[in-house]
Amino acid sequence: MDRERPLMEHLQELRGRVVKIAIAIGIITAFCITFNIRTYDIIGYEIPLPYPDPINNVAIQLMTVMKEDLLPPNVELVQLAPGQAFFAAIYIAVLLGVIFGMPVIVKELTAFIFPGLHAHEKEMVKKVTLPAVGLFAAGCLFSYFVVIPYILAFLYQFGEAVGVSTFLNITEFVSFVMQFLIAFGLSYQLPIIMWAVTVSEMVEPKFWRDNIRYAIVIIAVLGAVITPDGSGVTMWFVAGPMIALYVVAMVYLEKKFKPSLYALSDAERNQLREAARSRGIDYTNMTDQELKAQIEKREQEEKSKVSGDLIGDTR
Image 1: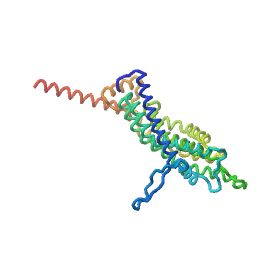
Image 2: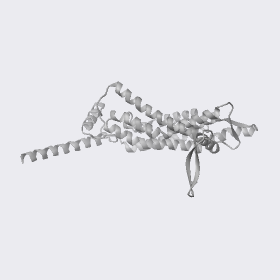
Image 3: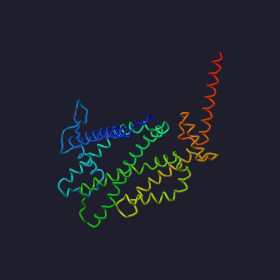
Image 4: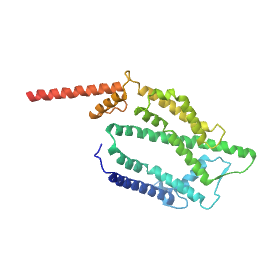
């Protein structure tokens, strides 16, 4: 850990980093709302380049792609009040600003948080970052290509059966899609949460298997809350993958973090960890017995080094 600093110094640093994040998001958002992407034939190659066009901007282009990919053929996207399409485009542009500004966001937050972390805590953050991003992206992709098209087709087919015209407000459409993308991206963080809770020893690995029935009920309720209909069918598009992720994480944690042969009290475990920290040992993925063995090995190395130094001095 770095030296302790006054609170105001921390707040000033945080303010500066938040301003940098806001500027990055603002620049990307402004680009998405004022430019579009066109392809130009340059020496026989189709190359996409930005072109100033506030009407048919990047956000509108993305909205058009979403309409073609997700809406059933019989559903017409409509604007019921002035400015709805514009504000929907602003909404998408801001989200694009956050997504493409994520490298700046991660860089600034990491630079602010890391100096206050121990070495093993920094290592834990590094280990979890890439899997968390991958799972979030997987959740968004599954939602976009599988869940949203099915749910919209399923819900609108009843109107088609009755013979009524089917319309969807553009702002409701964008909000619906973004809600599902974010909800699925966050729900796919479940294995990361389970891993973090287990590594911090708030629970033992067997906790997840012992409480799997309650977990399934909670996940099913969450799926029912997220999905907009009460059919009981679409909710399993949310709950099913989450249950699968839960089981995979449960099995992984049971294999990775095997229980110690000799249980330690909290005081003994804290003493063991303090000894590990003082020797620069990362105990993140170690059992108590593995950590004991590592400390004993390090102590033997230190004793051997001291003995070697003494022999050298006598010579």
